[in-house]
Amino acid sequence: MNYNNISWDEYFMGIASLSALRSKDPNTKVGACVVDDDNKVVSIGYNGMPRGLDETKLSWNRGIDLDSKYLYVCHAEFNAILNTRNGSALNGCRLYVTLFPCNECAKACIQVGIKEIIYLENKYAETIPTQSSKIMLELAGIKLRQYTGKQLKEIVDEKL
Image (tube, rainbow, N blue to C red):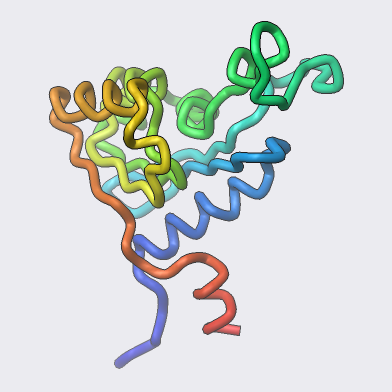
């Protein structure tokens, strides 16, 4: 029987994409979804300022010195890891993320035992942080795979 349902990859990348819409970053919205071997969502996250800070006093600019969002923003993968109630629950999980992880998030993924990263895009592939991220992830034996399924909007438009 064909139920014409979406694949697990489409489902979880859809959750990551929907989570990205929670980000207040005016330029780059990133979402992440961590899934276990039973295809159960373990955690989700999106890029944003640390909880409880008065965001009006921090910059969302790509500026320099203290006027740079890069000094303040927690990345989606990092938030997904921190949002997990039981850190050991991440060991052996898959991470769906809308943007290839930076070197700092790669370190966190390695430390908690993520086994596979499925990413939507890698627009910073030529940068040193992304190149170092790829090196570390490969050395750690983490499987990397670019998502090739339909985008969330495509799925919604098709199904509704």
